[in-house]
Amino acid sequence: MDKLEQTCNQVDFIERHMKYLRCLQHIEELSDFEKLLTQLHWPIISPPTQSLTPTPSCQETEGQLELLVGQLLALQTSEALSSPQMSKPAPLCLPIQIMLLPLNKRFKYHFYGNRQTNSVSKPEWYLTQVLMWMGNNSTFMEETIQPILDRGGVTLSAKVELCRGLLSLVQEKVTSDASKLLYDDVLFCHLVEEVLQFEKELRSNHSYPAELPGVLHLLLEDAVLQKWLTMEKKMAVEKMDAMLSAERAWSSQYKDISDMDDLKAPDCAETFMTLLQVITERYRTLPCPSAQLKFLELQKELVDDFRIRLTQVMKEESRCPLGVRYCAILNAVNYISTILGDWGNDVFFLQLQQTAVSLGEEAVPGGLGIMEMGRLASLEGSLFDGLLALLDRLKGDMLGRLLDFLMREIKEKAKPYCQERWLSLPSQQDQSTMSLSSTACPMMLCVRDRLLNLHQVLGFSLFHLAWQGLAERLDNFLYQDVILCNNFSDGGAAQLQFDMTRNLFPLFGHYCKKPENFFKHVKEACIILCLNVGSAILLRSLIKESDMTRDCAGTGDPPPESALNELGVFCLAPCDVLILLSLRTSWSGC
Image (cartoon, rainbow, N blue to C red; front, top):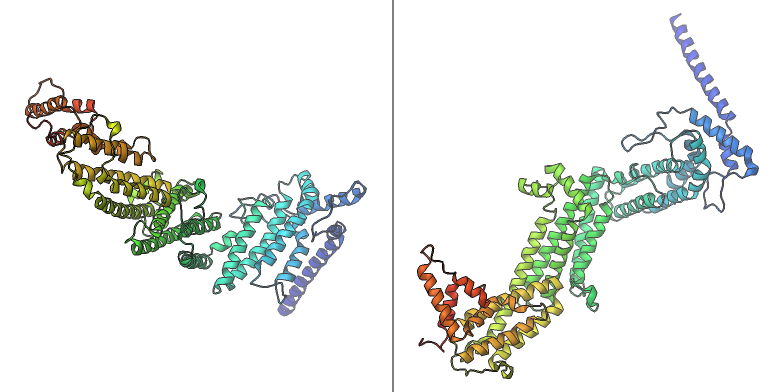
């Protein structure tokens, strides 16, 4: 009896299942939804030539469609039809699940199995096909299905639901292909590029909502993401090798277009920064900020690698700092520094900066110091500060080498001028008849030619630093080696002033309005040396008396600085003025 009861229960169980299946079959036979879709020429495989919205003569078809869609929607609970979220996407609404069946069947037929269209080397075939299906069927979804959903009180987008359903096919296929291609560099890179392009078209051309997952999150699986980062670095290093060895690596493509060449960046630097920008565009849309930070760290590593390469080439060229290649390297360093400075103020990188602060130790290998963390949090610094400091150090070192080389050349040309007989030059009352000292000509020509040369080969901001640095060093050299090392008659002082104010200063006047402000020591020394005898005696007495009484409080006498300021002397200290006054010979007996 026990065995018989068990057998009867099994028969009962099977019968109930059979009845259930017969019931389902009967319900399926009663539904004419798929037949109705066929009458409406669904699915639309090729671009529609006309609207598929039922015409007034098809009122019966339209009514049937609305009735059937409504009945299918009623089979799903309201919770199931709630708006899908990134974390827990809701199931597709039932009518669209049924509408997707023929497209699912076509996709599986063409892109699985032994079909020629199923090729891991051609992911664009299935990605493009899905985009075409989305485009071809969007009008039908918007004009025919959407009004029915709206009248049924269902707050869903028919077009988005269709895209969601087709996306599930793509997601499954990409996941499968990516795992197969981890050891094939070329095909893996091709897959990543195609997936990124697909995501871009999905969001832009098909208005797929940003809050819904597309396909990019599939690239964030640990193995896939690590492979992607490795390939980005490998390809970037290969391109760096190529761009630095190219024939036009150190020439600027805009060299003949003056208004487009402020930075005079050589081709290798522009190509490198374009490479970094392309990498940024690839990872910019990733839905995971921590993954974006990994790409940013890779970019920073590449910048440092490029800086080291530039430094190596610079050392080979440092024997000739005025050479085309040396200046091109300097322009490259300045260009990269300028672009990174701009990136530090870009909204995308500012958002990454806040992410780095919030993640702390997890965000940056090696961690962030407390001071650096504070600066990043307050937006006083940027994620590129460390690189910018290294680049600025290299730029300063290169400018220093260049200016040192220039000054050695200028000093050599200036030797006769330093040995001019300033003590015996006759006095000339009318400066309009004076001419440049013959001994100054080699130095002046050298300064002029080098300024013109630097203006042509250096970017605008670099040249600005270069001519100011040259002016500062030249001012110091002339003050120390020409003025303080000689004695001056009235004629010698007048000649020195004429050489400086009418000849040297104007050479720099092409690049600023008041070049004399960059030769403060020389300009003020000329003022002191050219004072008339009476004013010079009074000034010397004032300074000496001030020295004697400076420890006495309440003397009431104005400080000597006031008198010097009235003469236009602001840089030189009273003690320096006394030394200059002692170099005058016209009043040595006074």
